[in-house]
Length: 113
Ligand SMILES: [Zn+2]
Image (cartoon, rainbow, N blue to C red; front, side, top):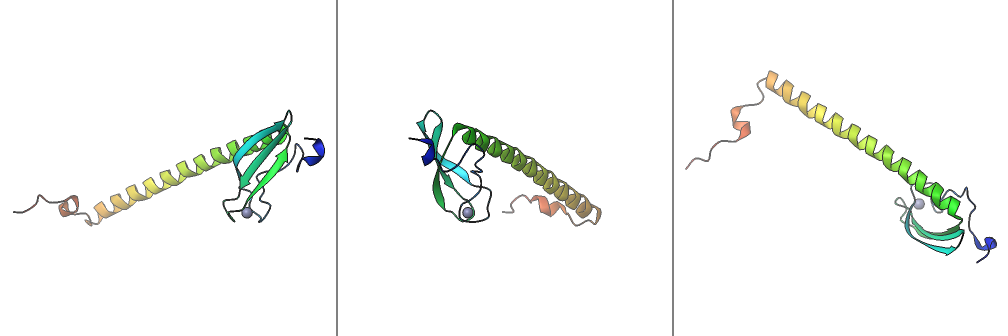
């Protein structure tokens, strides 16, 4: 398998969808074709297309870095969302307490026979 059959070089932006403006493409499968050539099957979560790229190892490493960064960012966002959600629920609870909106009934009553 020669260099000429590669679809991209070391700087190939594999996270970029070939079919839409999305930059969230992720690898489904990959296999090594040669010492410095990989075939990667990619999928776009936005338009759901799948396609294949043949790139050198450097491009695969680059994609791995992009995915790790994206994952770390996503985890930070999730933590932030959870924190905001928790704060909103706490402040909602506190203000409900302040206006007597929460009654003992809200916590459930023993079943009456
Ligand atoms: Zn797409």
